[in-house]
Amino acid sequence: MHAIGGLRRWRHNPLRRTTDLVEGWVALSALLLVLLVAPAVGALVGAVAQDALQESVREQRAARHQVTATVVRKLDGPVPEADPESAGGRDARTRVIAGWTAPDGTAHHAAVLADLKSPRPGDRFGMWTDTHGRPVARPLDSATATTHAVLAGFGAALFTAGVVEGVRRMIVRHMVRRRYARWDQAWDRAGPDWGRTGTGS
Image 1 (cartoon, rainbow, N blue to C red):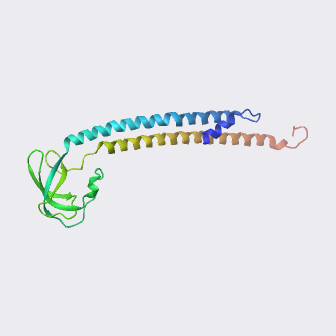
Image 2: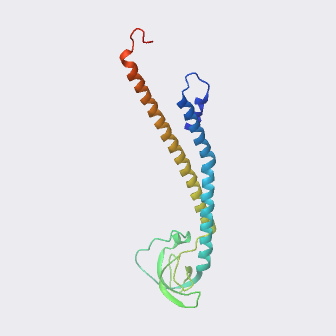
Image 3: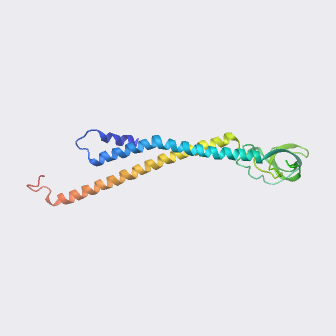
């Protein structure tokens, strides 16, 4: 809106100063940058983030495996925070000692989080491990990766627009200060003779 208001100074006006015209050009340039460059930057950042995140999705899917674990016994004590990468991790509420077989065929027993509210010995649940059977977080899914990429692109576009607007305001502020400085100099020159006969007042 500030840029659009600046464009109004282009109107033919006998009182228009050179700085008004310059300010109008600055406003138009800022407006074009916000409308054209900011979305382009956002799209570029989003595309780069999408490629990187989808590559991570493929790598995690290849390296992480879902196995079936069997509850040995329930553990008391506080439950650690669930992995933020996993939506399903927020449902894991119980710590248990469980046993499972890794993708490489080795047997494992360890304390893990189970998505069972009242686990009993012998209950089974799914969990994610690496190839050697070490517990890992659920792999990032494609939809979540796309959401993160979109947010990154949107944030980059907003940041670019904010930078453009900030630069425009700095330029306008500098122009206003120079304008006031010239007014002060003009008043200083006219002050001693102001109101005297023959001074053109």
